[in-house]
Length: 375
Image (cartoon, rainbow, N blue to C red; front, side):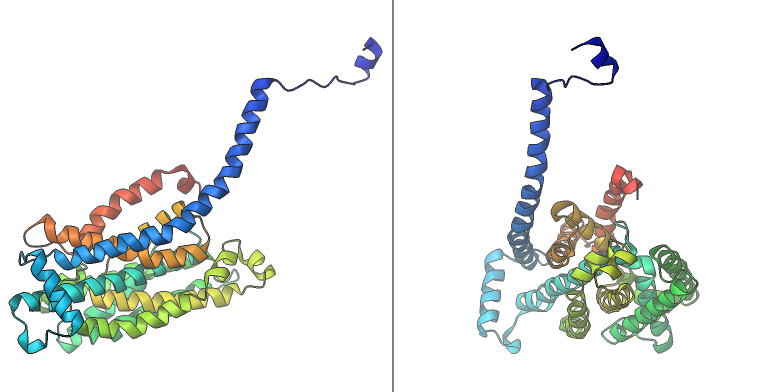
C-alpha cells in the first residue's frame, strides 16, 4: 500500500483474531440458548407445579392438631370419598379430619388462587413488579368494611361478612379509580398507585380507630385480622365460590390485553387493545378476588407480591403463562405457610404471620436487585 493511499483514508481490514471469534461465537450461542431455556421452563413449570401442589395438598390433610395416625387419616378420607361415612357415624377423629382439615385445605387453595391472580393483575395494571393487591387500597377497603360491619351488627366474622368485604373492596376500587383518573393525564399508573396508597392509609386509620374504641369489636376480629385459615368450614367456602368464579372468569380474558398494556397506552391502542377497558376489567377482577379472599381468611400479605414476581423470573413476562401458573404457585405458597404454622409452635401460628416472615426477606432481596432499583 502506498503512502498516498494511506493518507487518503483507506484502511486495510484487520482480520479477527481467534480469541475474538471464539468470544463472538459464545455470545451468539448464549443468545440462541436463552429462548430455548425459557421455553423449557415454561413447559415444565405447569406439571412440576401441579405435582408440588398435589403433594402439599395431601400433606395438609395429614398434618395438624390431634396427632392422628396417617393410616387412620387415609382410611377416613377413603371412606368419606366413597360415601361410606355418614355424618351421624363420625367420631372425634373423623370430625377433625373432615370438618377441620379438609375445609381448611380447600380454603387455602381457593384463597391462594385468588390472591395470586389478583397480584399478577395488579402488577400489570401498575406496571410495577413490586405491586400487590393492597397497593390500590382494595384489601384495606375490605378489612374496614368487615370491621365496621362487626361494630354495627355486633356479630363475629362469618359468611355474611363476605358481602361486606366485597362491597368495601368495590367501593374503594371505584373511588381510587375515579380519583386517580381525574385530571388532564387520565388514569396513569403513578396516579393510581399514589391514590391507592393514600386511600388505604385513611381506611386503615379508620379501622384501627374503631377497634381501639370498641374492645368487643377488637376481640371479634383480632384472630381473623392476622390472616388465618383455622376454624373455617364449608360455609366460608360456599360463600367464596361465586365471587371467586366471577373474578377468575374476568381474569382469564385479560392475558393478551395485559401484554399489550405493558408496552404503554399508546402502543396498546395501536395494537387494538383498550387500556381504559382493560384497567376497568382488571380492577373488577381484583375487587372480587381480594374482597372474597379477605373476608374468608383475613388480610394475607406478601402472597400477591411474591408469587407473580417469582413466576416472572421463571417463565418471563408473558401473562398467558403468568396467570395460569399463579393459580398453582400461590395456593402452594399459602399451603406451605399454613403447614409451617401448624408445626412451628404448639398453639399454631396464623398463616398470615408465616407469610409475613417469608415475604419480608423476599421483599428486601427484590428491592436490592439492580433491575428493580432501575424501575
